[in-house]
Amino acid sequence: MANDIKSKVKSLYEIMKEEKVQELEVNSKDYSICIKRKDKNENTQPVVLKKQQISETVVPSFDESKDTQTARETIKSPITGIFYKSPSPSSPVYAEEGSIVETGKTVCIIEAMKVMNEIKAPFKSKILKILVENGKTVNAGQDLLEVEKA
Figure (cartoon, helix red, strand yellow):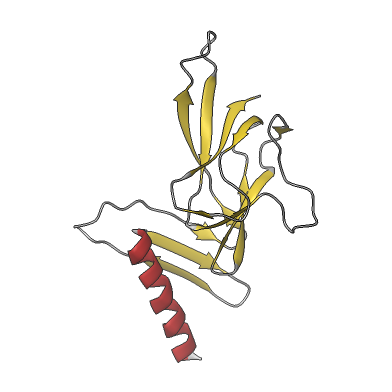
């Protein structure tokens, strides 16, 4: 059992190093683990992962082609993984372009290490554009959805 945990920690640490993640927290029904690393030579960002829950990153941007200067924001992927618009191929998508989603509603999933991480709307949003194809790999920090506050 101890070797199994040691192996998991080592694997997680290697992924953190590869993805330049400074902090990782994993909670499951069997165990909780928090790994922190510091490397003075890398430009790292803290990321906290909790099983089935990922905090969103929202970065404001503006479309200068619009006359009204509507505030547009993007929802970014907090981790590297596979982007999915729905929980399964036969299920309806979480959000479509033009739809309005409530605060906290799941807008997509990022699968990483066999865990489905739900990405939720940080505020009531209108989905302007889905920037990633279903089933494609995304990197940490990559824009997933372009939204505006509804």
